[in-house]
Length: 88
Image (cartoon, rainbow, N blue to C red; front, side, top):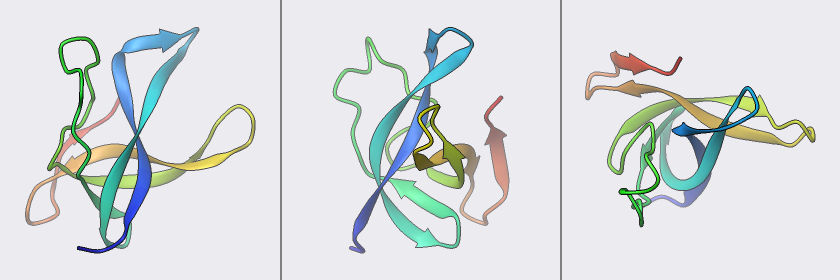
């Protein structure tokens, strides 16, 4: 398996002001801006991830309020790299 990288997935049920909270997860880099989430949600009853373990996601660079740049998962892709869901 390739080296794992950290990407962030939104927690749709958790907000801080107008911002949705994001959770860092481990993902396998597939190619370009495509990743497959490998982390497991340890507490799915209390913390709902927008994308799940095993999902292929498209990521883009985003910036936290403090200026830190991170990779944010914004779309779920199918096996043919077609978008099946896009984050709001």
